[in-house]
Image 1 (cartoon, rainbow, N blue to C red):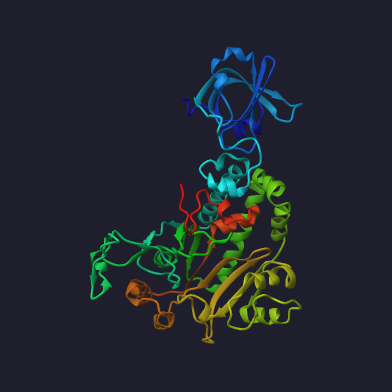
Image 2: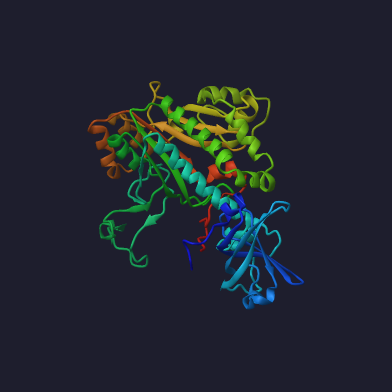
Length: 462
């Protein structure tokens, strides 16, 4: 099929130059015919824009009659610049081959389809302009994440997908087993996990953080970037059951240094999106949300405001607006509270730190007041929290008290205790949900539309 000889459409359009005997492969987006001419537009997925194909004397190509929208084709011909026209360059073919036929019932006709409809055909929606842009954007930002950490001396770690530990203590995990569910072995009425594949109760991971701590306390600075699974039955535009998380972990790092890295990381990604993903960002600003580019540009000019949770609560209690959820010290801040801080009080991104220990995870370092922990949430306008992080509890005696307080199963944490027993050191990290980051930067309103094949309650298609 001349895979290595073919030209991709993106560079052809970027630098229109006359070239002979060019091989192009892709899918037909549109076709129209006139006397002695046929016009095709094809796309190979490398760019938002199509390559115009001008077929002179169509009768020369017997297979042309079978080629319809959606068909896969191979073309060999000459590239001819047309600077006076909108598309700037076109291909005049000498060979046309139908690689894959496409019948008339092709679901993606030349009209606008609703996002709800496209979710039902998620196997085909990447061929649309919107989801082509979303998936190319996803790929580029994933690269930027690796670039950021690799340039700063971090090591990429693959955290396990199967774990025996509940990192969050919330219990919303998917059970992993090879048991016949109709014949589960039991002892004294309880499941006999010793007979299961791993000889213990195991789950799909809800976070790679705890395992990242293992590597951080050996290699220094590490990061994980992989899938995690949450068995929440929240069926909202902001929740899915499987998504990817970026979780850096730094040894000998306190909360303030952790916050500095989180801020630099966000700003790096916003700048990368504007500078290296201009085609996608322009598309999002035109078709998805008009102010996307302006929003990121404004953030890049902003400085993070820093307040304690206690200070944030006092600000919210004095606010001249009525919140749906009342604010008192000790409650979890809701999105409406976080957005008020960003959008109305500070008019800037905000970092809120030192949260009550009862509303945060067991592994967060307890502050000297014994009421709060060294935790931070990074808030941005329009959505609120985008990053959550903390300094980890490195003192074994305090960690054991927290584990008991939260009711976490101690037997699965023996190795986590060992990290505090043998050469413990202060260390910190944070988590950033990749899909929510993409939603924010693109303006897409539903998390299902920034994940190629989303998994949600009662739905695991494709």
